Image 1 (cartoon, helix red, strand yellow):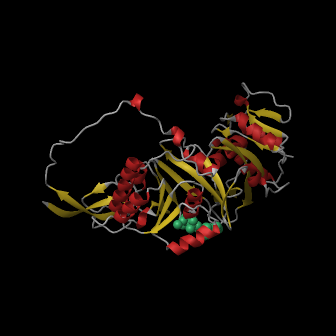
Image 2 (spheres, protein in one colour; image 1 turned 60 degrees about the horizontal axis):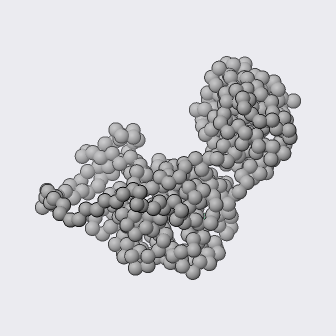
Image 3 (spheres, protein in one colour; image 1 turned 90 degrees about the horizontal axis):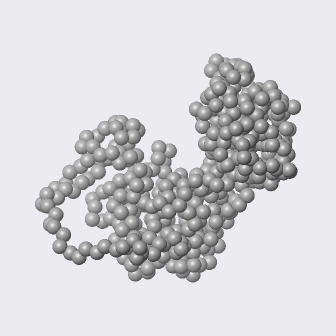
Length: 449
Ligand code: TYD
Ligand code: MG
């Protein structure tokens, strides 16, 4: 006996309720509840009478050595060294960021059978993109379909090693009454794919769209289910794209991959520092170079600040690529500890190149760029500044200092300013001058010309 009822699910976190709610008690977001149809069955499940099998962990072989590489180093590194057979990867990102392009390029690098399932484009449109990306692989199959049952049947008949589902929001299972894109459909389609992938040892890339508020449906829900969640980010008016792992059952989540979108697809950026510094403005106040760690790689980048007098009431603070609240804190530290009056000034801060940085090690550079712009004094452009700034105006130690210094040296910088507490155990380096400072005022006094 079954009857149909409805319930309400938060499309952000998956919180369930029998009533519609304006604000989600789970994740506190507003207006995220959507109606879902549920089928309930009153029948009790019968006791299991089938065969049960266990295996000894020592008898099993690990799938680490079977990792399937795409040949795109930036992508493989984010995955933890390639796909583990049977794993499901969720590739999320804003519409138009390049998810389909990335998935297709990754798939074309694989020497085995690949099935690209599209629910958004026609097979011909896929072909147009493939030509643009110069896909040559002979084992690349395309299917334009949204019914999961047909997709699973196609997978079973083709036995590919990699399946791309573009996108999960367009897929549906015909047994369910919900329309495609609803949480129930997304969850059920994903769990079916997971189950098939684990059983038949193929890998799946699930493409998922994101809106400003998060996923269109069920981000947390999907994140819990899949093995790996990677996010493709970038500013729409910049050509750089950053691939970040948010969850990875088989690798680190610290790694990032950097790409540049070009006319014929995504190009790997192997040396990000050179790229971020390529348009560096020389001899201009407010410009400072710093070294940030992105995963295991140090990246040198330019921090730019512009401080102008505010003539109308409230001064503006705008930060691009940097946390706004962190900027407010650093401004307060500059006022109180270093004595710069910023309350009557507009402050605009920018991470050049469109990168987003959330590492405290660039605090010192941010403070110095603001001071430099306020005083209109140029900072020597051969200096790299590294350090976290505390509320007392003290400069605190940061991780991976050697790697950062090496990167600065590699790119021909003459001097690096580091926190005093990072000096311990630091190896001598002949080709770059290492200077230590204890607080913010020391740093500012030292670098202004
Ligand atoms: P697409 O992969 O379709 O994005 P998504 O699947 O995330 O929605 O790519 C979208 C953008 O990328 C589109 O605006 C065109 C641009 N693009 C290039 O600049 N070069 C290329 O070679 C390709 C294929 C796309
Ligand atoms: Mg797409």
